[in-house]
Length: 419
Image (cartoon, rainbow, N blue to C red; front, side, top):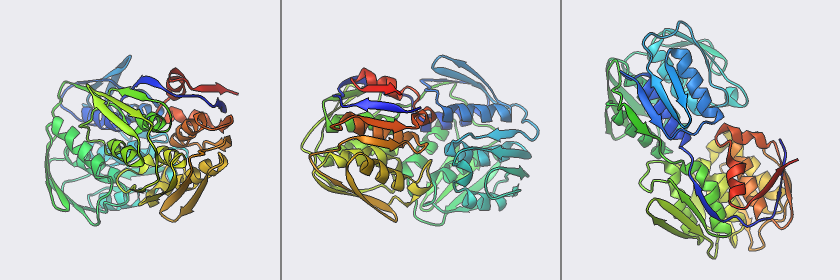
């Protein structure tokens, strides 16, 4: 699907969708709980449907009712289930250890770039816990149940490895330790997992460089819970507010554990005006100036922040972003291409990107969405403020996390039409 976007003024109020990161964690914990859990505020995207499909394949039962889902937990695991993770990296990295905690054998498959994305360190750790793997990347088969014990894992490859082990070992009877062999990045997402597990009654103690997990057969259902608002996807409209007219977003928790909440502080550093009142975040344009941004804990913020940088005066240097080469696209390369396609200037380096911004902003043109939802959304926000119309190819990629993105953009005054 290709979309043409004409210059427009984005302004007004919109509602944050449910956090995909939170939804994954809640669905998986509910699947291994002691009784049913009703989860409200779910926003259904391709990645969320992937996790739903996988927990159903493992033996859970899910009932969807508009924006809520009731999860009936796994009573008896399916024999050798096929776990189709689609294109969702979170689904794969969370459920690889969780599935091996509940069933003796499983087969994992996926599509898109998912088979290329790294899981080797997670597989190595799980092998020490009694699980055998047919391959080191998708598609693969597992054999053997995960057991309690010591697990050594790097903290700088993917926080999702740690989150997956925390969820899995919480349901493996006995005491386990997750020992980090390097500095941890994206700590906020691990804290999200710890918070969710605490709500479900897990017993986890955090010490310097390790987590001590006292596993039990079942987590304890909170019976009913609501999903947090999604800072990661709201970031694109927050960025639009910083570039153009005032934008208000309801449903974002200023006290959320989501690491991407940091975008508020970063937009203020750029020079945007930020207000928070009664659960509404308001972003208005200020005099934007380039700055230096470490993406180690918030790598997914690069596409949205790079657009702001293109409209700021001076250079913005993004560092700590090597992991972005292993996302749905090589995001250092695709963000660089998107900015330059639309008439801006950027310099790509091994683990980062410099955007050479000017108050003239971007011109417009044609760019490829690179089968990456965040590249498409970033390009769309950039296009709204370009001097000329812009064509973005492959816009169906937004279905991965935010299928109604273009509808919400139009409600804010965007002019986007399918070609």
